[in-house]
Image (cartoon, rainbow, N blue to C red; front, side, top):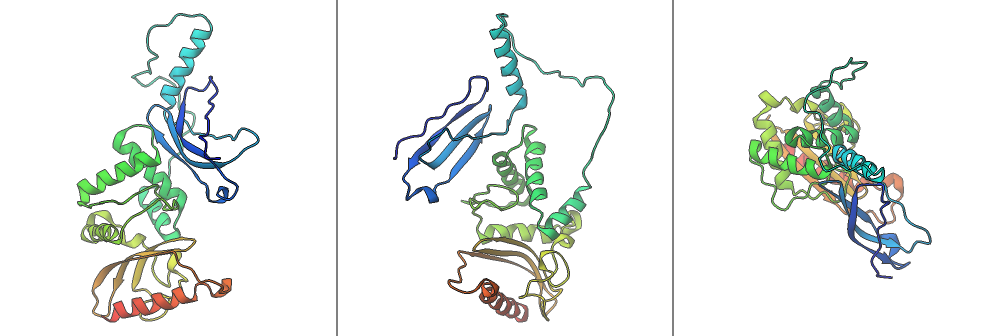
Length: 290
């Protein structure tokens, strides 16, 4: 207990795995978690703790740099065959001739964005997150690189200051995401000021009308119905909203609601959301009338 875990990578895999993982006691094991940080050159850093295992505990990693991986495999095979090779495995710099047998393209970006926002589609969100990484750095994309690219783009284009914010993925499913409301408000302000070019306002779910706000109990009655457009974000104990409201004076205002650690104790599952619904209803009705 407390001793470091040993990593054993088969010699035929040209990757490097390292980290600080310790063996946890039986009491602490339920609270253990393994986290993987992806580095350059197919290097993977593992952190966390693990319960005592009677057999080897297997981990699988997606190859982040397939070109380097293939080159290493070729060099190793040549060495095993006794073929002396002192050069470098080079990739073709020009496109190879051949016939295209099949192509598949995604739907246009505006359609993907609208579905992602309206339906809170996590797969699209994570895919676009990694696409930003590739388009920015032209290298194999990862969540870590996606976070770096996102911050770089929004800082340079929108002047958003991220401070100590942590972005772990594109969907928001990771509990490692830590973004303060002020940072999110900066993003909403940029969207509103640049609507003529971004065309993003129509992608937000509309209270009582569509998407993830079509049946949100706190917003489906007058005067909030149709007057609130916001992106939802929910995990166990987490209920977030970020978007816009048209108030009683016809002004469009941005708002951010981050609720974390929401607990209802012994309430039945059917009534667990009742306090949340009441809170949101009072809050947004007050904001509307202000």
